Amino acid sequence: MVSFDTTFKTNRYNMIFGPFTGVDHHKKCVTFAASFVAHEDISSFEWVFKTFLKAMGNNEPVPEKVGREIAQDTDFLKKLCSCVWNLEIEPTEFEEKWNKVISEFHLNDHEWLAYMYNIRDMWIPAYFRDLFLGGIMRTTSRSESENNFFTMFTNPHLTLIEFYMRFECALDAQRHTQNKMDNDSKNKRPECKTPIPLEKDASELFTTTIFYEFQYELEIGCFNCGVEEMKKDNELYIFKLREGTRKRTFDVVFDPTTFDTKCFCKKFERDGVPCRHMIWVWKARMLEKIPKAYVLNRWCTMAYKKPIFYLEGNVLEECINAVDKKMLLNDLWSEIHACVSLVQNNEDDLSDLVKKLRTMRIDLEQKKTTNGSNNISSKVKDIEMLIGASLPSNVLIKPPKISKNKGAGVHVPNQVNVPNQVNAPNDVHVPNEVHVPNQVNVPNEVHVPNSDKRMKSNREKSIEQSQKKKRLCKACGELGYHDSRNCPGKVK
Image 1 (cartoon, rainbow, N blue to C red):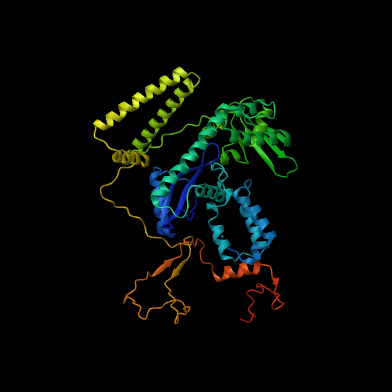
Image 2: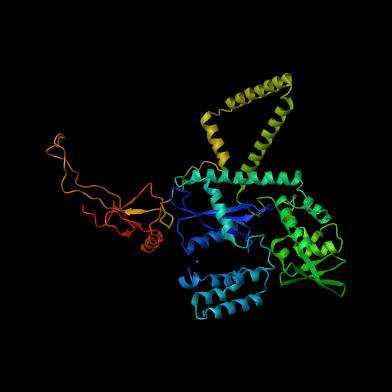
């Protein structure tokens, strides 16, 4: 499951930045790719998605529309949301509830709602109940979190090179957080709240985040679920469970020979975490271990990580070499820190290590001198290794033009006001002749440098004005949106 959303004000060219976001085995945001587009049009986004699909080896990942009066009807919104965002109903039940809501509020002829109903299999959760989504059912919060994360590293004044360097820093911070959570999950065991063996087994298998989700399901399953009926059908046990005072019941089918378990709430198929009803059945059948079929590898502490460059015929060989060099540098620093930590308590060993390192440094400096390298070339090579590309002989990619989109700020047309008369004080000398050039080159469009706000429509201005509280003007004595300083009836 991949979430894609665009954001603005990340570079000086007003280009739109769009990261592709997913979740890792800690259910934290992870960036798969990112894009820059100059315009928010269909062709630009088609290019983005096709390029992303190609980079992923062609493996496809799986608004005011109804009118002000209806949108403000809380009863309508409540019933519509309970129908649309219910994760426990089947498509047939959804269609039944949708038609009931539409008929109740007399919206059978509403064009937009009819269109949304025709494409219901593309956005209604009831049609995705048995499709693994990794916990991303609504992508807005996930994308907004990712956009907020990148704003800590970017600003509207960056060039593309500066943005790329900061983007790399952001990904390094993301990977550092993931490595830290990996280390905590492997070396720390979360506290179990019950003596049930299933909980202890989960604490050893899952990452800390997933374990707490499993623990929550286990608590509800053990203390809030009960069996209403149990029957046997061809060596299969069928349990009908109820949660507390809820009217809805959930059927769980259990095979005692293979431990295959299927619950009709379909939480496991959707999120990859066993649901409370499955856990209740396992506990009732005295299982001490979670069946292997219900331990997804992607949620485990030892999640298998595939190599980054796996595609056949990948043209990113230079980037692969850069990654290898970075790994060697990381290994070098690890060895240095390990040596320092071993000798830091012994003064003789410490001085001996310093002498050896100094000797190695002198040898390396002499080697660089004999090879004819200089400081300038070494700096260039360091920068090339850092960004993973060599300095081109011909510059083909140049800084783009400033884009004009809805997040691009305010553009002011060329208007130059020249006063008819110039009033100068008596003590200021004004020359008799002033030379004025015949032609003055003025740009067609002037961009206000400190303006980050977009232009608002008259409708937005009137809505904002109506939301403000009226105050008493001391000049005219009337309630309005002005005071004595800007009173329209004030004599100037």
